Image (cartoon, rainbow, N blue to C red; front, side, top):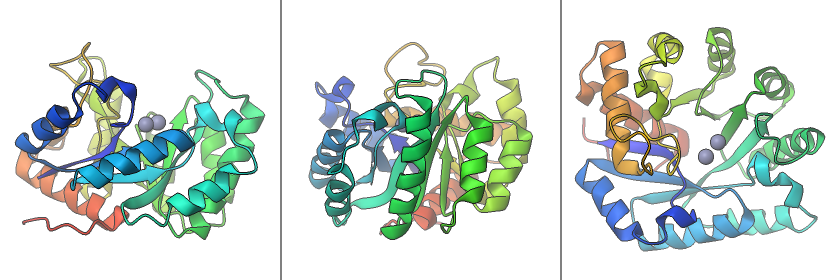
Length: 259
Ligand SMILES: [Zn+2]
Ligand SMILES: [Zn+2]
């Protein structure tokens, strides 16, 4: 069984055919999908999807692109949503200095606040870092929280991977690991201990080969898994099992994983 540890099923790209998307995931052996709301409204939509589909769990928080919209009511609203039993983590929070859709100083401030809120809610954190490796690491190092969480769509270098692992984080690898040019990412994957590795699609984005160029969906996490198993020189079953157990452990998922 595979777990897609980071999807965005609530995004409009899935409005038309969500039931088929969820079914194709189940048919491909994806037993669990963690969907990540990026705005308060999308967090609510994610929870309504999780209420309809048993294998779907939810991460709530405000994405760095969207933090400029946070106001005095946002965090109380998230505190209320966090009581839903399908909520398994807080995020994605972090920094995106690639697109800078929210000003950098606002991103940094809201990242710190959201880390503290995750700690208050006793939820693991899902960290987004794009072109902001140094700042992300510095903030995580200074954070007094329990440092339970995952660096999703890992794009840092070997030293950053080491630093994140040393702090106790899991590292999640997305579809681009299947691209011919991603040699550097595959080298890093070799180094990450199997017991700290997660799989993700980040769908509808980052579609792996052989579907590159089309919309991504949770069923395609199997292609990412196959490439990682090949890189690590282990069987697909072993990789699927280890990464699913990791996700179960991190997100405290109430599911059975057959060994
Ligand atoms: Zn992200
Ligand atoms: Zn995401």
